[in-house]
Image (cartoon, rainbow, N blue to C red):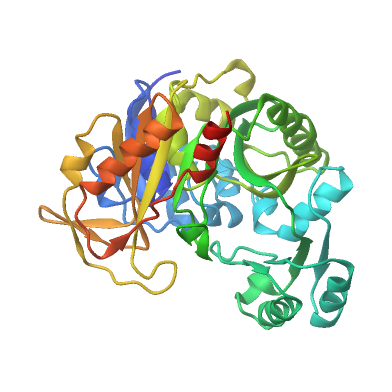
Length: 429
């Protein structure tokens, strides 16, 4: 393939990692990021275009000879970014609006699983409180209540009691998340260990990636509210060879076939949120883009040139490609602003980033910062992703925490127990 010009849509840590990986490719002539963030400025030209402004993104791509658009977040895909680019003959790494329903509609996904016998939790779909509450009679606590649509990662409630579940049902159906919760899904609570698995597909060929585990809760001991993710590591020992085989045969491959049969072939990355139960893997949810923060550690372990693979995926030529992965382990610690995932303040000064980044095996991806002269300021909830590569998981975690210790940011916080499951696995071995 010749030289390509790439537009990366998004401005968080995931997109920083994608720009970093694409920037190492000898076939990438130029990278644009919309809107990007200040930390990407050395690798990409930043654009004053919001990631949800689909017409402006398409117009820019058409006028600037963009070869490939790589979409980081889910909302532009749910708004039809890939469809609009297709009308202008521009390749997009990401699914159509119809196929993006795998993430944008929990009910759509659950119905697809039921129709094609993809293992998942028992569920019901509801648009009114009374039948939803009645459905609770058929299961025991805890209960999983989900807004059907996209709710910025906040649309899932784990209710520990019947009273909490009924309150969540009332709140959601009363407009807690606007149109996103006009309909809800209630699921049985699955017991097991969670894992994230990723695979690329062009609608026919499937190219497996690797698994990771993240930590959603804000505080140590898996306490506090759910967040976008406070840390992650890869590989994940719970994702054994047997679990990999079953995940591909029972979940990923049937999904790709099902989407084709439904007339909405899926192109892009399938991010499967899994529960590894006693009887095998079960699908919790799909995301139609790379996970954040999982993408960051996948990019650290990836040894192949990312650009040709994403281009092949977007162009229907994935069967000719493969991916090579480092046998080493990657770990990531999120540093967030105090108060996150609730209210937090912006503008505090962050020091010590250069000292941390200079350490062996460390790469820092910025998720919510801005630059003011020589200073880095916090500008979001999840602010920094400290990633480390080492020979094994515990070493990678130790290395990442040593780097975190060099960063001076009193207004920030982080979890001190990322990887506790990994350490338990290693001790059991």
